[in-house]
Length: 443
Image 1: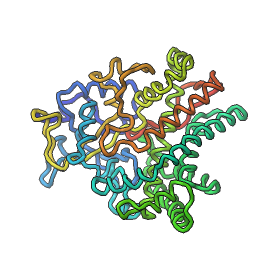
Image 2 (image 1 turned 90 degrees about the vertical axis):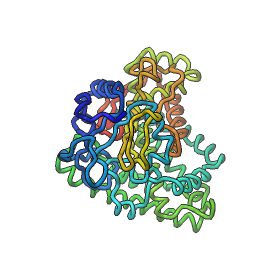
Image 3 (image 1 turned 180 degrees about the vertical axis):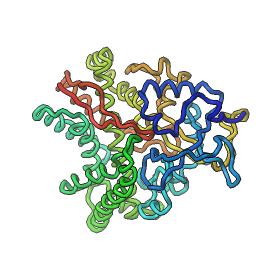
Image 4 (image 1 turned 45 degrees about the horizontal axis):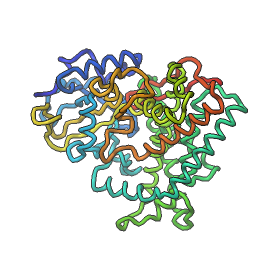
């Protein structure tokens, strides 16, 4: 069995920025059509600039190459769209076949950018990935985890205090973005003084990653983002040097003084890890928190169920929010060897070809989830892929994100049970993450 060429598939072009500006129900219906195909569709990829940014939405003109056909000098320019739950899990849990090293974002990071800023763990394969992950995992001691969980409760209580006192209009800037940012800075040991500057750098580095950008932004933002990233990593590298000289009881100290198989994080590795924590940890949790408040507002029967018994339903609500909203939409992998997807009779994928793992589509797979478009906080089991499909790249921060969401919602709904969104969230169209720019709310 071979893969399905785009010309033989439904009229869905996942490489077209216009697709990601369609209403969510239209995109969900398109993915449902793709899941019904006998094999993954091959999408001819549009030409993309080498900006080194993290978004997959810097598309230009069509490549002009016939989709699904190998060129004379290698695989065709494009990717196989993995939209089924089983296929995404297989690609995630077979790292020797599906490589992350060439880059998991679209476009893949340019070589000079990786040399300058260091490799993010998401763009590494074993043995280097396993080595770095061991160093990071070893630094998360039971004492640190307990302290972080206590800190989440303190930060959440303070944020709800501020909501009561100041009555802000935007849930994203006042609550959803602040909680994970402050928790990560406290965990890392970032002093108060540079925090606003670091948050500004994060916003500059990741702004305008959606598909609906004017031409001027498409030209100017990449350089601006790289400068912001350089400044942010410079701040963290300096902190790392200071902690080596005078270690304290924080994560940066643990990472730069750890001795795991004779290794510890270098300054560049520390900067890359901190960038990953901020961009991945802050943005994904922020978006999940915002989507969650709106989902609970739009589904009053689910909200009533949750508020009626927080102890019983809060964990299920968090997992269903992550499944339904899927903060990270996609990652890509590169085939190391020829491989038949799903077994010996499955479609043949060739070495060097690309696949894109669509987590949002996998989380609506009808063969896994009953009534997948419904929002149901009692859904069980709920084997969603909101934190990845398993394997060595399963999200390191999954436990932290769940804790932040549970603590914040408990604090908010216990003290302000009428808290709810007002109107629709302001979304940023993107093929990479399910981003909420703003969400008006009241209590």
